Amino acid sequence: MQDIFVARIMSSTVHSVESETLVEDAAGSMLDNEIGSVVVTDENNHLEGILTTTDFVRIVAERKPKDQTPVERYMSEDVITVSAQDGIRDAADVMVDHGFHHLPVVDEDEGVIGMITTSDLASYLSREEAPSPE
Image (cartoon, rainbow, N blue to C red):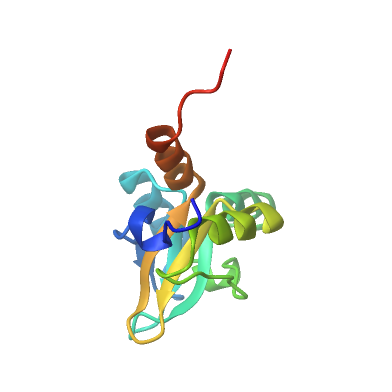
C-alpha cells in the first residue's frame, strides 16, 4: 500500500458550491448526487471550505429559520488536504487522526481536483486484499 497514490483511488468528480450558495441548495446537490460532502471553491476553483453531512446536524440544531442561510456560515474553513501524489496510507492516517470521512485532493495550479473518502479506501482494500479469516 506504500506505493499507491491518492490519484489512483480518489473520486475525480467533485461537487462544489460557492460560499454564497444557500445550505438548502447545497443539501439538494448532496442528496441528488448521493454524496456526503461538497467543497466550497472560489471562481478559480481554489478551496475555501468543505460542507459535510455532519455540518447539517449543526445547521438543523442551530439555525431557525433555515432558508436564506449561505454555506459560508457553516463550512469548515481550515481544511486539511492531500495532493494526488500523496500515498493512500498517509491520506488514511490524516483521516483517522482527525476523524474525517472526506479529504479534498488539491493541485497548486488547478485547485480542487478530487476527493478521497473512507468509501474510496474501503473499496480499494476490498479489491486488493484477501478476505479476513473467519
